[in-house]
Length: 184
Image (cartoon, rainbow, N blue to C red; front, side):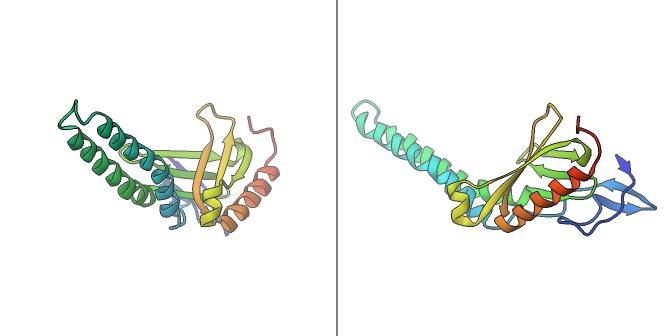
């Protein structure tokens, strides 16, 4: 298990990144869930994909009715699977997605079957972005993206309350600006 020394902070996502034991901390899951409104944001995104797929399958069945007598069964199966994904995926993502920011790093956890843990040390952060698409604005949400010098790519925290995301970007900007070096 990875261990390092840290001090708890009073910052956004406050606390040490792990349960402290004798001055040393152990890596643990990030503490915070995304905003519950993210479930509706993700559901809306899935519906934007699901409706055309379902419509396309049923239109295809209508045009091939004389050729495929069992086409309606295929269309029904596709419809049921797509509806299940629309209903389950956003709730599952909400249950799994976690994030936390400490004075030392930004931590995220995502993934359905394969859990992806990402850690970006403050000293490696090169850029912090706050994005709000039109559907996110509808739900009062934002995404924060932390870009590092790593080739693994940026860390994204999606589905945060807009005010919290703005404060988080400000905190990360102040913290990374105070760290000497060029984040490479």
